Image (cartoon, rainbow, N blue to C red; front, side, top):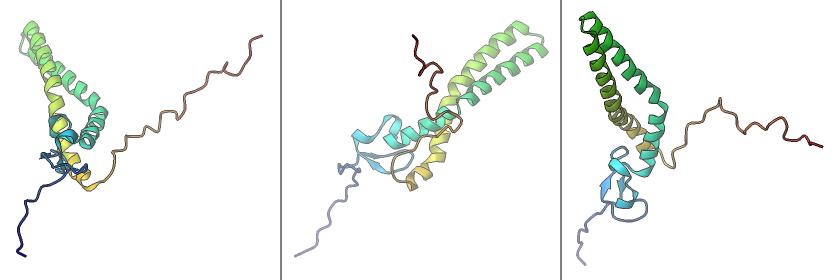
Length: 143
C-alpha cells in the first residue's frame, strides 16, 4: 500500500473547516465563529471589555485637544477661528481614537488570548456591592 499525502485542513473547535484565522489569537475559525472585524467571539469579547474600561481616556484626550487648540487660537489673536477649529479638532480626536484603541487592545491582548483556554472572565468591580441593597422598609408591616 502506497502512502498518499492528504491535504491538511485546519479545523475550528466545532470541527468545521476553518475559513480564516482570528486576527488576535490566530486560531483557526470557521465562518460561523468569526465575529465582526476578523475576531473570534472570545477575542471580540475580550477587546470589548478592555475598551469599556478605557473610555474616559478618549473623552479626556479630545477635551485636552479642544482646549489646547482654543488657547493656540487665542495666542495667535484669531479667537473665533480658534474656537471653531478647536471644536472640529476635538470631534476628530474623539472619533479617530476608538479605532486606535481597538488596534492597540488587539495587539496587546493577542498573545495572552492565544496562550489561554476557555471563556474570558469579565473584570470584577470589587467596589460594587454584591447584592442590591434592600430598602429599610422592606420588612416592616404597615397596619
